[in-house]
Image (cartoon, rainbow, N blue to C red; front, side):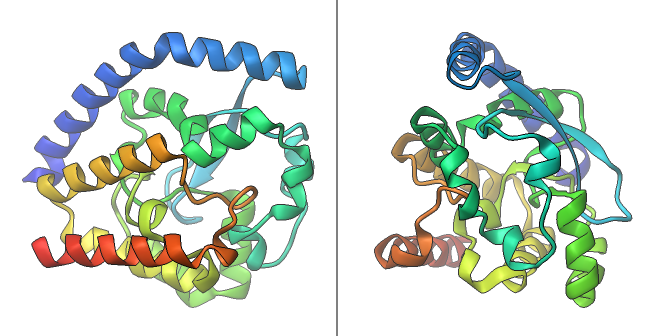
Length: 230
């Protein structure tokens, strides 16, 4: 019952509250992005959970001084998790935006439109999914079984280990799919707020996770605490 009624209500109420509260901040962010990049501050990316799922146009604050065609000019699975070759195109302010996860704040619009959830599997770009299907077809088939709406945050977004690649992504996506609940969503939203406030959000471009063993251990410990309490 939670999947149909409670989750939808929780998404809308919290997203509406956060959007109204954060609208002045979003406007300030847009002005800073425009001044520092001289590009449109909001971009729209077409994403899905799998190539067979519904396509949605996701809103994001621009953090890279590049065109979308250059951003998607890659063809290997590791690039889904790490794109540090693009770090030179990210300004200091946009680096902070990405590390805090606040570049995804405008996705609250997607939640209000009913296209996304606050908590759910991470939506990937079409390029990412094509690479996944070509190089890791079994993982893509497993992703096709996930029926949850894509989320702004989620198990992988908080506790994912990029070094373990797509296997880690699908493992955590499947765990959430099987165990999602009102209480679990509240816990994941709580941990998301910690990542935002401490700017320790995992990111493919500016993330230093491979050399940050301490943070990884802390995440694993928190994950274990959550699993023990469910």
